Amino acid sequence: MNIRELIELTGATNMTPETDPEQEVTCGYTCDLLSWVMAHGKAGMAWITVQTHMNVIAVASLMEMAAVIIPEEIEMEETSLAKAREEGICVLQSGKTAFELCAEMARAGLPGTPRED
Amino acid sequence: MAILMEKKFPVEAGAYETAGEASTTIKRTLKQLGVSAEVLRHVSVACYEVELNLVIHSEGGTLTLQVEPDKVTLISEDVGPGIPDIEKAMTEGYSTANAEARTLGFGAGMGLPNMKRNATAFDIQSEVGRGTTITMSFALSS
Image 1 (cartoon, helix red, strand yellow):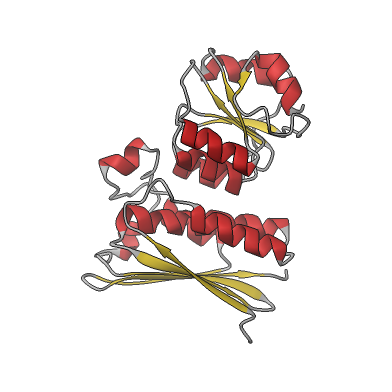
Image 2 (image 1 turned 30 degrees about the vertical axis):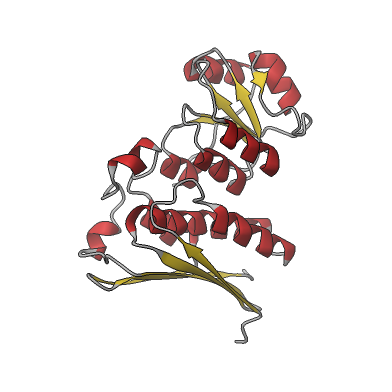
């Protein structure tokens, strides 16, 4: 699945249309504890979180994620979006809950992450 | 072994907005040097955790990147307050992060254990009233 297909699947709004729509999405994840995500994030991940501050983009960028998905119509700060564009991280906004988004992504065959420990 | 490169990054206490900038620069620098994706990932995670710790817990400090032919070393030095019980601080789930840090999604008590997990060698020295020094190295060859 790539970003374009993820957008078609979820009906989410692309807040960073400047980023590459063909980028591959490797897995899905949801968590709002950034420290936890730092321990479990993966390259190419589509990460669902209600957090919208700058550090979300820093984490996504350092982990080389494909996308950050903000659920329930929560708005991400413009400073964070600007940083996302700069770092090439796609930010999607959706009216759906994290649970609904996970279900849709899983049904479409997107895997979760294997436990390493 | 000879140090090929050394860079220092000052990190300000409480500067949540810019937290991660030093780590991003360090990651870019190492990527340009041709460091493998796997090592880069370990360095990035540990580096961001230690940078965040400087922002959340310290009174300010410096992050130093050293590159040698066979390893990358990150040194975090701060000016205080120091950690009274290192063993406790190293315990997963234990955190002294304040409300602001927790609201942002930090303070899960994962930082130090996550650094140790990602580094090839990890050392922490701390003295209350003086400060904390964390040294982490990452082997470049398997």
